[in-house]
Structure formats: C-alpha cells, structure tokens
Length: 440
Image (cartoon, rainbow, N blue to C red; front, side, top):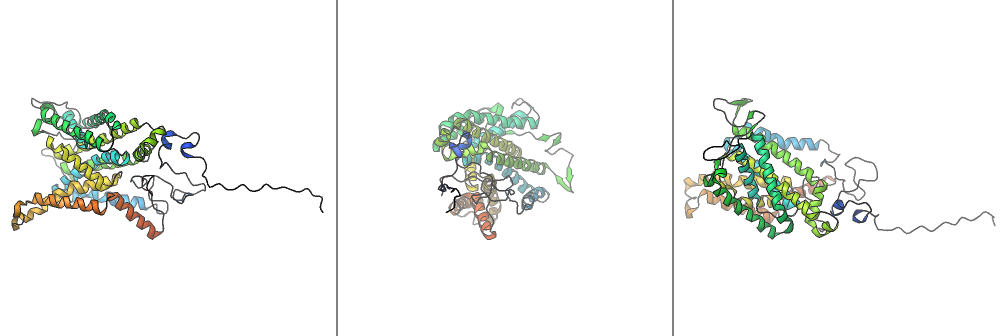
C-alpha cells in the first residue's frame, strides 16, 4: 500500500433547472421594466453581431429589422417604397393627388389611434373630436380676423404647432376620465366628446363659421408658399407644381416623421410600460408602474397625432364644415386600425389607404353604370353601389384575416423565413405590436 495521502473529492452538485434570479424579483430591478412581461431580451453571452441568435434561439432585438445577413435589404426596401411616392406628383392627375392627400392625412391621425388602442389597450370613439380640434385650431390661429370670422393671423407653421398643442392639452384634460374607465365604457365616454364637439362647432359661429364652415388659410414654410399664386407657376422637371403637388410632399414628410416617432416610442421604456398595462393592468400597478400617468401620456400623444392629421385634412379640404367630423369619422378611424392590425403603424397606413380611397374610387368608376341603366334599377345609384361594395369588402377582410394587414405581413414574413431557413424578425422590431404574454 502506498503511503500517499488520499484526496477526497466532493460529489458534484445537482444541476438546477431554475433560471438565475432576474426579472421582477431580482435585486435592483427597475419597476417600470419589471411590470412588462415582454421586456428587453438579454444579449447573447458569446460574441457576435446583431444578427447572432441569443441563447434561447431567438434573434436579439435591434433597431435594424433586416438582420446582418443582408444589410443591403433595408435600404433597397425603403427606397423601393418611397421612390414611387416621390414620383407620384409628376404623373398623377389632380383627382388622385387630392385623394392621396386625404389618405396621407388620415394615416397620420390613424397612427395616434393605433397607439392608443393597440399599444395601451384603450378604446376611443372620440378620435374625430381631436381631428376637428386640430383642423379648426389651425384655421383660427392662421386666419385673419374679419367682421364674420375671428382669427389671430399667426404664421402658418406656428399656427400648426399651436393647433397640435391644443389637441394635446384637450387629450390631457380627458385623461383622468380615461384612467378610470376601460373597455366599452371608455368608448362610450369618449363618444360623448364627438357630440360635444358637434354642438360647439355648429354654435360657435365666430370661431368655426357654424354649419357652413369656413375657409382654411394657405400654408407656407420659411417663405415658401404651398398655395397657388396668381401669375406665378413653379415648374419642376418641366411639370407644373400647383397646390396639390406641393402639399403632397409636405404630407409625405409629416407621415414619415410620424412613423419614425411612433417606432421610437413603441421600442422605448414607455412603450413597454403601455403594453404591460394593456396585457395586465393589475400586475403592472403591483410592480410600480403609474397607471394614471402612462394612460395620460398615451392620450396626450394620441390626441397630438390626431391634431396633426386634422391640420393636414384642413389643408387638403380647403374648407372645413362640422358635418365632416361626426361620429362616422370616428367609426372610420376605428375600422382603419382594425383592418390594418392593432398596434402596427404600417397597418394603420394600409388601413387608411383602404378605407379612405376605396369609396371615392368605387363611386368614380361606377358612374359608368348610369349610361347602361343598371345603376337606376331599384334606385341604386353609383354612390349606393359603392357603399355596398365597400361594406362587403370590409366584412371579407375581417373574416379572412381578423388580425388585419399586420397579421398578414407577419404570416408572409414567417413563410419566407421557413423557406429560407432564417430566423424571423420579432414583431416589435418590424414595427408591429408585441404578442400578449398569455398567448401560446
């Protein structure tokens, strides 16, 4: 036997399947982060770029949604989407340009509602009230006072900023009511804003012009007028640029900035807190998230988006009347958000294109039935036929794809990832909404 001392080895400890202490119960955790089930993912332990999968097999979230395998895909897709819009004023006639202005303005306002409903889970049927406040606010601030109508005669850019601030203040004043109601009760309470707004617009004649409305003053920025001047025509590449062509680029720039701001907000701590309130309000409150403060913030930002869209609508209409901003407009915005997909800014743009453009396009082309006599049978005019087709199209879209355009885009993107063997992009980085934590 050897006299060497024996070395006693301790038995290996059993591996625990429990994850390391992190999340809401970890020491030093941020309450606003802990309240949100779908918080930011951890970076992978090993080195690698933004396209390297994390330890759980999922792609880490990045500000660049196209991954690192194809860095050229982002610029190509963005250029392919923007180039036709930039070239549109050179080829479209006034009807399509005017319709495009309505669509762009409607999309800006719809982004505010998809933030409120899709990200914060707050149903609002009073969106038309804030759109009207932005339109009439800009008209009042920018118009010169007269014997019939009152106005301040401020510069157009300052008038637009004040109109957006006015709608934000109105949304902030309504936020205490929104913080104490939810679901259909909040929808009914917000619907009361539309009726109050209609009464004020009809009876405050010095400010709004009453039932007949009032003209909208032209817009100018840094001395460049967007209105047609007598005896002066601007040519760009041999194409005359009138009021519609100039406003087209203004509305397109505003929409792009609105999309970027929405994306940054959704990916911030505030956006995660709003989704936590949407998915589980009680748990979020227990983790230290101020429900009243974040709901007030959601209504503030949503109403400012609506006011900005109202300014663009006023410029596109040239003359605004109270009848335009009724209950039907609030229902249209709700349809836009549902068709496009809750919580998706891109879906809101898609829904705005569908809802705002389909009825006038159908009505325009169905006037050809008047000569054949089919439009007069049974009292069916082209306008009535257009409404029937429009309603049927809405029902089919909701039945075939309840998740709207955003769900269809995620489905196509998922199939493309399966065919190519690549990881799919997570919904938030793609501009959509995070799935509910209770979803399988």
